[in-house]
Amino acid sequence: MLVNNNVKEILVLSGKGGTGKTFIASSIIHLAGPCVACDYDVDASNLPLLFSAEIEDNQEYSGGQTAEINLELCIGCGICEELCQFAAIQDKIVSPLACEGCGLCVNICMVDAAYMRPQKSGHWFKARRMEGWPLFYAELRPGEENSGKLVSRLKDQARQEALQDQYPLIISDGPPGIGCAVISALTGVEVVVMVAEPSVSGISDIMRLHELLKNSSAHTLLLINKFDLNPEGTRKLEEWAAGEGIELLGKIPFKQEVFNAISQGICPILVPEIRELVEPIWQNIQTIMEENKQIAI
Image (cartoon, rainbow, N blue to C red; front, side):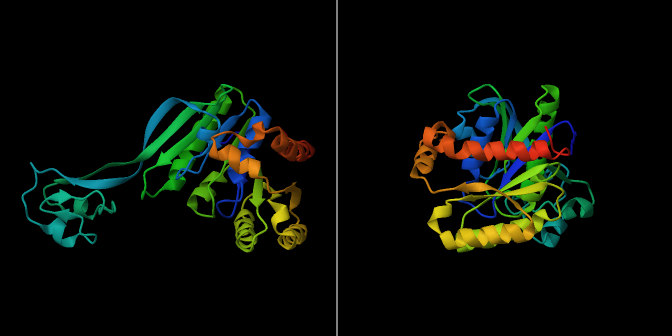
């Protein structure tokens, strides 16, 4: 993993989907101006849609290996078919959907007919946002694993771009949940903005996310979105954050305009009413980073 102290990264996370994470990430990316943007949600990237991104580079990604049999070398002994725990081999043919890439067939083949080859898992992209600044995102094929490795690949590419073109800041829209993709996304991050909604599941999931973040050195901040939909839940989140020593960035009310903009493929920050709500949030993030010498840009 390429890490450089001259490049700072802000990562926007949520414990679950639907909290407004991408709304906040896209908004602060827009307000930040010249920066490298990343979308680590490799299963469902939305930033390219909101920024009308134009693809500049498209690279194939291989997250694992699958077995294959050279029929010219195979003697038809059937040992690999008999011992394959996943029933992936039939009549000397390996099913790429069933093969788990364990490599057993390669190890037991007496004539070296079985071998491993890279398995195509998806693509990662370098694109340009409407202003011309870089955006990195990826598409993992449905059902594929190793999303954490793909996130690591994106992070390396983004940092190389930031160093090469002297961008001091990377702002990233992270994956939902607390899985391996989130853990990979956290590498080298200075500031994490947790976006929470005051629902029962939203409160539970953001607390679970924070437990994961305790193992990270990132400076953790909390933003409560749609706070007016559940005042009691908002109060619980505020009390919990105070008890955990988490700085509260602010609260944003529910706005139908956010959903209308996203459904039309428009970055919500371009709506004046939404911009007025988010600008103070971005100013608070900048102030916190400036006050902390370790994470100042």
